[in-house]
Image 1 (cartoon, rainbow, N blue to C red):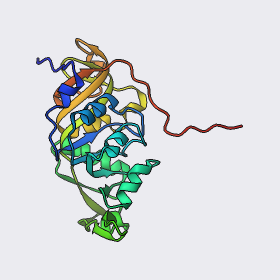
Image 2 (image 1 turned 90 degrees about the horizontal axis):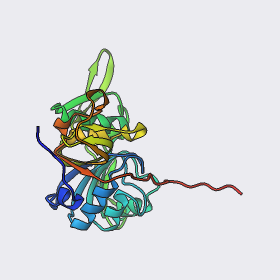
Image 3 (image 1 turned 45 degrees about the vertical axis):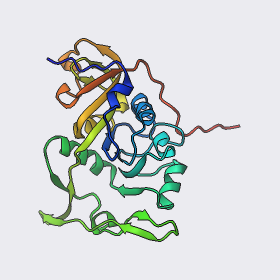
Image 4 (image 1 turned 135 degrees about the horizontal axis):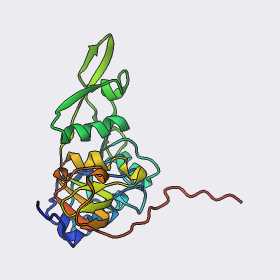
Length: 247
């Protein structure tokens, strides 16, 4: 088997070019590949399409790529509390393709499994299926691009919408443990979008907190066939997305 470890995170992402599409694991600030995102920002790649549930928060995770002007398009579920994300979207600086969370996860998983498209009931009867969601605004606030209608089909008397699988150029993911062959084990809720994002990438780069020679097969959450590069980053602290203090 091939040793997939790379010692420097900058080397791991150095070949990600301008214009690349990147699937990124994590939910909010949980299970995000912070070290790889920081390395990508420092490498300088731009005009990126980011496929992720959200775009981090202001000053954290993918939010740092937004602030640096490196992202031109996103495919995700919500803008959340990221003020810069909302500002860029409404100002016409980035394009945003909204998709339901479960649909997004399945689109990434399907892409990695070689499934070009699938039918789902999520979004039927809404603009997700019928089109008309603002994808990109003009600077004056008018809409420059709307989402297009999607194919629908009836099965068993129920209507479904056709969604396409996502195959990204690269994927960046975070795992609790990994071995040198790319097998990964995720910790609790960090399983959120990480396995699906990893499957979606043509080249998947995983940052791992613990690196071992070989994981026990019973411990493997994602087999190394989906992972091309492994970077040992040591223990990582999960940030707090919203802090509430009572008097």
